[in-house]
Image (cartoon, rainbow, N blue to C red):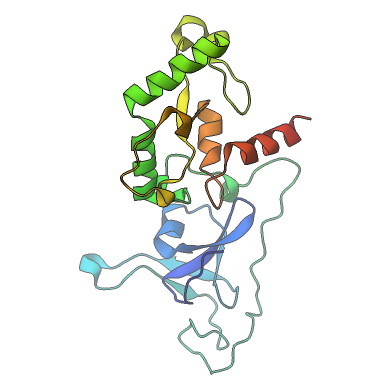
Length: 218
């Protein structure tokens, strides 16, 4: 869980089967989320920012609770809210709206929006990517995902010929900023596996994601 000082500018939201601390605006933008106070775990209402930033986006306890330092009527003694908000109960394999990830939200990735963009910029260095693909074709005659073995050409025919994505093995946060990308720094992966590499609490290694894939396809 993200370390955030308790504040009514944040709340806990049930995302990807766990409670995650998020800004109030995130909860407002995703109205299907189950949310609760990050301190007392009671029910809250998410309030939008006022015009011209007269008030910021914030959470208000409904009903109020005197045992929460984030609330308006704190009595100095922290106690759990009597109406605890629990995690949604799932039936079978059906996902609740809370659990459906917004895949185009780059801020959802552990690198953060800017670092994720820098990471993708390095992965799209055309000359290096073409060199990596050429080497793989010379060695195996195919461009298969290093994790799931998906082959775009085999699955889609001519439109998939020569297509595969490149993943920079070293997260941007660990790069010195002057290091030039080499072919050895890239892994060739399908689009699905590429997104999954970036989905965890930290950027997964090829080996880590392959272990997860193999475990679920045993």
